Image (spheres, rainbow, N blue to C red):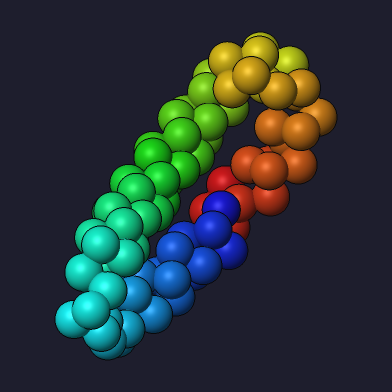
Length: 86
């Protein structure tokens, strides 16, 4: 999860420092939309990770968590089970 947040911050910094050619205003709007979507994705990922932590505190199984996330319990455990502040 920490890696995802780091990647989102790196991507956000790249977009903030990106200079747009005025001739490419349509592309600029598309890139701005992409930037906003990437930030929302990072926020949602953080929310999911917090919810997973809470579920695990209540001893919810990885299988149940995986089902709620639309994946397997093993995939959920691999993605969210190694968090630093677990």
